Figure 1 (tube, rainbow, N blue to C red):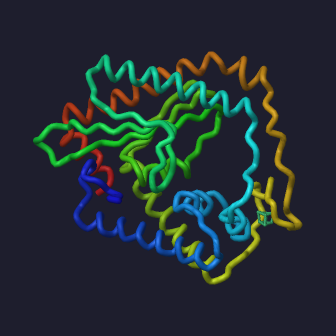
Figure 2: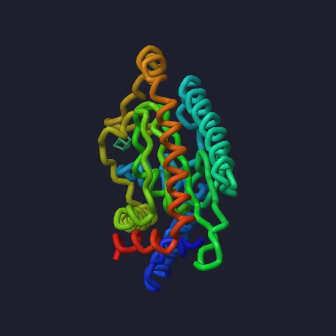
Figure 3: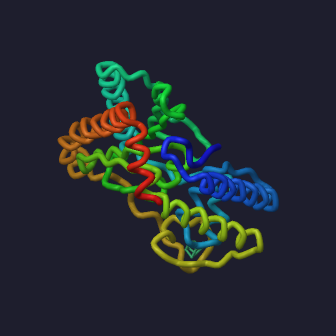
Length: 272
Ligand code: SF4
């Protein structure tokens, strides 16, 4: 996988450096799961190590086993917003004349997106093969920063549809370049520590729902939704979030289509 694709014109030295960082991570992830005697996908390793500061919790979360149940309402809300957004996106893309492939639940190397778009008709004057966008839907008010950074290892830009807030926001890989580098470095160091046998217990808010026998373990907080607050009161925001998300995607595609080189250089300037 090319981490820093041609889309944002990375300097020659950056490409191998970042590719190397990811290759090293994959090697370490394989070594750890091999030693522990179970299989875990690379995306799972990235997610667990970026979500839990506690090393003991990281180990238990990497092991196969039942995951905490999600309330049916949250699942339905997510599915409803995603399907409506997917339909709205496709209709608008057709209207605008964009030939874009759309996939839902596309499992990529570093994560599985709600909706993935790949734009492959960028003209012949630039050395660009495709531009990839991932749309992530959050039905509530959660703002999943680590997840977005991980997604930016797979795609060029992420558009977050915040249904509960009635908003959308776009993050490109170059916007987050420095943080992604730090995240990769941190996960690499944590993987090495886990391989060396570090099982340090570091208590914090993540102790809720921890399956380990530990003095800090706390029960899961009640996920039963308050339907008046989380459904009725937020319904009015959903349409706005969907419409804004569609606008963000179309705006990105228009900018890339219209002046890929200008867009590329403006992104690169922020980085270099
Ligand atoms: S309860 Fe907290 S400190 Fe204890 S193992 Fe679990 S996450 Fe770590």
